[in-house]
Image (cartoon, rainbow, N blue to C red; front, side):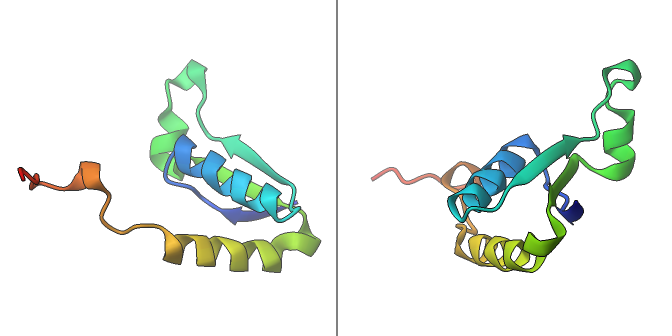
Length: 85
């Protein structure tokens, strides 16, 4: 298997895995969290990695790129201002 990408967090990892599965691409998630070291490796290496079979890598990269472009840039819960009205 080949590394596809390093997601920022668990939610992103599972969202991407779900999207890939919709296209028939098997993906596995490997977190770098280790309870013995209380997440030390995550601070050094990132949250984890999503891996796919080598023959699916190019298509998976295309799908993830399209998914990232389609994702909203400004999520409502990240906004400093609120609509009152």
